Amino acid sequence: MTDTALRDVATELFDRFSGWEMVEEAERCGWAEPLWKALQDVGFGDVPVPEELGGAGGDIADAITLLRVAGAHAAAVPLAEAGLVGGWLLSSVRLGLPDGVRTVLPPVAQSDLHLDAGRLFGTVHAVPWGHRAEHVVGIVEGAVILAPGPAAGVAELSVTRTLNLANEARDTLCFDGVPVTERIVAPDGIDYETLWQRIALGRAALMSGALDAVAAMTLRYSSEREQFGRPIRQFQAVQAHLVALHQQAVAASAAVDGAVEAVARGGGGFEIACAKILVDRAAQLAARAAHQTHGAIGMTQEYPLHYLTRRILAWRDEAGGHHRWVDRLGAAVVAAGPDALYPAIQAGSEVIK
Image (cartoon, rainbow, N blue to C red; front, top):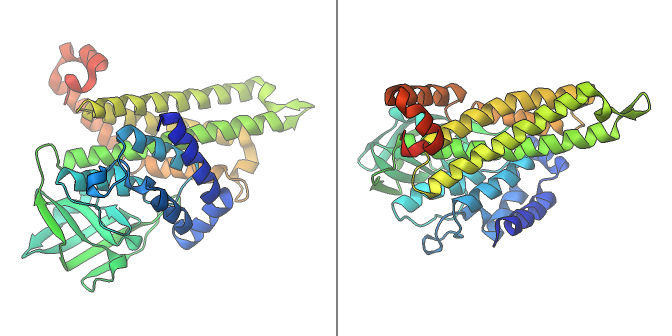
């Protein structure tokens, strides 16, 4: 299936199961279960895991296409965690996909996790959709682990519900001797840093899709809303907002495309850092331009703009946060020396790992 065909099919599915009324309902009840079931029925939740491991096949570009559509629809499901990140971890050690909802343990708090006699102990914060997960995937003590999640009803696991700015579940899981289903030593190239990169790429893809939707919604509103007898998009001040908004959406999309191409070549650390930084900045500028163009109506609960802008700002603070990637990229450039700067801009991860 071509990228265009996949995007069209995905858009039709998300249009059916993640309209704005459904997003509102998902925020009230904690997640979009009908959407998740629909995604599982067509295999979108298992992209890009190889078919021989129980996945739907496809490559990383396919997974990113799906995430962009999900972001544009403010989809309240663990799509990035199930496929792009969790599926990648399981595939790296040739583990097949378990049945049920799965999520990923962020590496930020995994220094508190440890294994003892095949049981998992410790606390992890900000686990996406943690309370809904029947399985959790992560890296603990240099190994890829698969363990039961809260929804599996394990007595040794407790959960504290928390939300991000977009009312998406980011829960705290406390493991008190949870029996680990699988534990396999991680191969070379699978560690906390590459896990952070995958998480960041997933968030950047979701944000890129949401930015496209914000730009389209704002252009449509400015074409329909009239003031002094003409559409407000004809006013110079509004045009400046529209230009800035579309510039940021295009820049974010290009940055994500560059990161995907680098990952497909076997690298991507440098490009993912750049993409997260650029998309984070785009989120700030685009949210400001969109709300200034919409005026008061953009702040109301009834108008759907906030479903998108709250998410791009929430996702900006995730995957380690904006400053993690700024600091890491800056340190890598400084360490490489001045002569490596321009080649790094040209070749990316071929110069700075």
